[in-house]
Structure formats: C-alpha cells, structure tokens
Image (cartoon, rainbow, N blue to C red; front, side, top):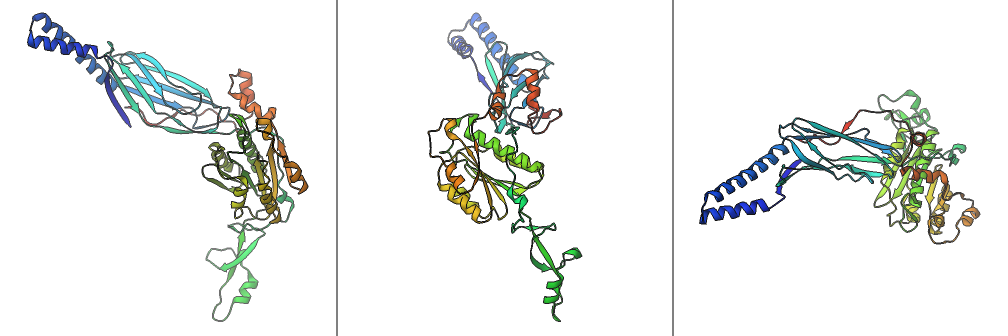
Length: 437
C-alpha cells in the first residue's frame, strides 16, 4: 500500500506571506504587492514540485535469496528511478527492517529522467523470523519549504535458520538394535506391525488380505473379505525434546545455553535425518511446538523453521513438558532431551519414559560455565539410574559459529561457507514486496 503526505518544513515563508497579504489589505503598496506575489508564487511552485516528484519516483527492492542460515550473507539491491523531468535535490530512503545489524537507509540526489542504484549486504548473525521493509522515501523541493513522505507498507518475511555445527556423531538411536514397537499410527506402507483388520475396499492389494480372519468371520450371511491394517514402524524414530524454560537458561546473546541448545537440536536433527531416521521436535516457548517424526532431509527445513523462532521464555518446566508428551512418544522410540536444568523433578519423567520402553538420552548443558550459579550435580543421579548422558560445556567448535558475526577475509568466508548445511548457488534477484508507484 502506498501513502504519501506533504508537510511544511519551514513555516517562515508562509508566515511572511500572510503578513504581506495583511499589509496589502490594510496599507496597499506596489512593493508589498510585488513581494507578496513573488513569495506566493515561490510557495506554489515548491508545493507543485513536491507533488509532481512524489508521483514520479519508483523504487524497486530486491534480495538475492529468500532465506539464510546463521553465517550467511544477505544481499539486497535498491533501484530508484525518477520518471519526471524535475530533479530531486535531496532524497532519503529510510528502512524499517527488523534484521539485527541491518540498516539499508541511504541519502542521495537524483536528476530528472535518471536512476540511482546501490547494494547492501549484512552478515546474518542471529537466527529468527524477521521482517524486511517497509520503507519511507523522504524528498523535498530545491528551497526546502516542503517535505513529501512516500510510505510503502509492503513487507516480506525473512527467515534466518540456525546453523549446523560440524560436531562428532551425537546419538545412535537405541531403537535401531531392538525389535521395535507399535506407534498406533496407521501406515499406507507394509510394515512389521499389523494392528487390526478392516473390510476389503476396491483397490486394496491382494497381499494385504488376512485369509485366516476372512475364513473365520465369513458366514453364509456375511461373506466379506478382511485386509490387514499396519502401524507405522517406530524403531529408530527420535523425538528431540528441547527445554526452553526461562528460569533454567544462562548466558546472553550467542554465548548462552539457549543458543547452544538450539544448535545441538539442529545438528542432532541433521545427523539423524542423514542416517535415514525419522525425527520429531517437541518444545514450548509461548506456545507448544510439535513436529511429528518424518524421514528425509527435506523434513529438516520444517524443524529448522520451528527452531528459528524458539526462545527461552516458557513458563512450563521440563517435567511438565515430558508429562504432556506421553501420548506422542511411543514405545521403541528414542527421546533426546536437551536441557541445562539441574532440577531432579524431570528425572522422574525420564525414568517413566524408560519404564514405558522408550530410550532416553539426556544432553545436559553445563549452565555454570555460562554464568549460572552453582547447582546440584544431577549427573550422578542420571548415572545411578543408568540414563545415558552427554554433558555439553562451552566449546570452541560451537563458539566459532558465534564468531562469524565479525568481519571476515575472503579466505575465512570460504571456510565459513563450508560449514553451511547445503551450498546455495547464486540465484536470481527476488523482488521484496511490490513496486512503489
């Protein structure tokens, strides 16, 4: 949507014109009349100049990619065209994007029938869902009497996905070595879990017919055919349970347990999906985030989008989150719990997981290394009950991701590009919003 408004920058000429008009009415002279018409004509010309130019300025805003990961470069290009024969003595583009560290504002002058273009780049140093736009174009007349503001409210959502760290293998799901269990979710594929039977429908393959049930239930009055229904095979499926309770996290900015937890979840999901495991995500901030387990690297982007907007603002502790997930995490699955909490209350829920045939693995973030006060050591209790645990402290491998917000040389940028999840070839420029008319 386009909105334009003209405001007075200097009231002195208008006040002077009013004074000359009053003086001409009560004490007319040729000098007063001449001065009044000169000043009134100047004001009218300046106003017409602003109105005319405001309708002749076109702005196109384009970006190189529609998304990025932490450490990627966002490239934007601005093209401003003046289709009028009148020049623009001064103009300023004010950008209101929410991407941290990004300011695309610029001041310039533009002659008639000319255009100006420039490019802006910024290093995406923080994950999240951000807004590109809107923009204001401020312009004025040659004498600075009026200022016209053209506002274009079109915006685009720009997602910065969390980075994937080059860490060693974090988890081998225990379900890959077991006989599996039932997920109680219907599958269209043939699996080892046949849960029930149903009436035959046209198009069902003959291999799904359960002949024993058909023989037992078939009577003279009812000669129906029954086929088997299969459950999804949960063996090797992994649920990533991410604790985002606001009272247990420590640190600030990129060097915090919150960012470490998200990077761990991202890396863990990438590794498991590349090994052909089905991965799901369960977390809570202001609302509950649930991503059902699926296979394939394409599923990773669904998980990354959820992780991009997650922050440690939840009022729900980990033990309640684990209790609420009992209907989701089924027997034979693996639960990867990521938390900096030393509260023993959630340990009971983890033990309940194991009693139900679920394989828990706890990734315990060492919160005191991030500035949290010392807390009771829960690792001994986890070891006593035989819960497999991985302790994560501050590491150079993870902190190097945070260092990517600093200026880089060409060589270091190439090394950073090797860290990305997938290489992205240069793409065409994508228009942000609509063209300003």
